[in-house]
Length: 512
Ligand code: TEU
Image (cartoon, rainbow, N blue to C red; front, side, top):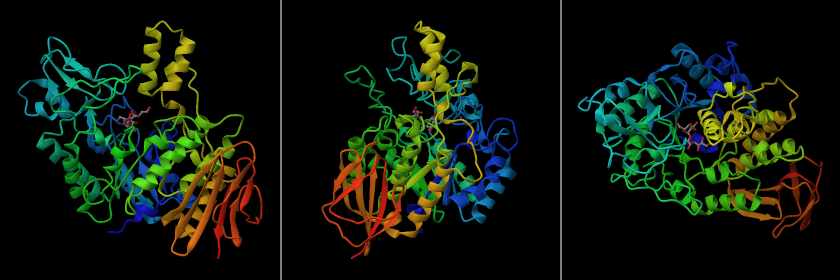
């Protein structure tokens, strides 16, 4: 098996915002096709295309109503085929996002399922009788409110982990599995190189439907509605279906607070190839110690064959330079995080616009807010008596439109873009950076440094996240060395203490 993905740099193309090719204000496939040369020039190896399937777009496409067709807002099947062909022609792979956990409530399967208690598709979804005239249990949706919706005509509740328009499928049902394996084969036959599996650890739920417990702050813990033991046999089947085609990759969106749980899904033969670790990727504040602890955990907890992923932005969160930035240091942080994801051990994912240093977008009129999470947060705030202006702030904070503005493509001269390009080039040039292990991994007082090693090659990467200079004592160093890159100086004399300038990045090749 060619494990091309282990060395790859991935690029998330969030279809609604990546590039608007037909001028209707919404991103589309023709737009993305027009940017393939840019992506190639940047150094991208693999593109992750978010949902483009037919959808009422209650959740911007993560509510699919037809797994076999392209939403007309995004294009058509011919365009999709052109996209795959043109990406492949340039040597780039394509993985597509697939939502197996739920369908849109407009999907014909659900329309049938809800039509009567004895419809053949009834059991394709999770229907339960009321318990003491109430909801079957206390499970909360990830998009606010109860995860159960009452359906008047058949007098049962259906389960939805996200919005009520995103209905959870019953993965205990063999026909559901078969139907979804057919979907995967359809797209594999079209030539896709793998899948990004949406909320894949949500597929199985507790068969006894036990109530979820709460933490000290009164927040519900999702103990029984995800990461259930049955999930692993489903993923084994999925692995077999997909890897019966050569050289495919399975990337899992595994939302969990516990890396030990996420780790269980990384298994080339029985489960997924790589998973997102949100404990690092969606960290809310710039806390170097916390980041270090997570990277250290991924380093120690994973075997040589298990690769972590490295990302700090996506369509689901505030852009990291806005999240972490203060005092106009966004540009410096963009470069430091770029270096981190491209030189630490793991498979990097760049989110569209990140390479241009794009920051968050504020939606100043609720009518222009598209994200369901934002809209629901606004409504909840108004219901609590909060005024409209404050409610809008809350909606902007809780919603995800902040990171979903159309990408501001620029031709040349954008310094962040140039930096990403150069860093990808460097990553590719040195095997220690794309395939090496850590020889050391250290942190001290807002500085992060590590030596990556591959065979005889050793490369020291040092990152100062602070606005002030910092002294770093190197334990094991070689005075003969070659500066590969710095954003602050042109040469370096290596001694056992290096004084790093504010926000300095150093990449140094150690020679014996
Ligand atoms: O996201 C899964 C998920 O858990 C999100 O709820 C995430 O935690 C949240 O957005 C953070 O604010 C995936 C998709 O990436 C997301 O866009 C979809 O809304 C969601 O699944 C449902 O399909």
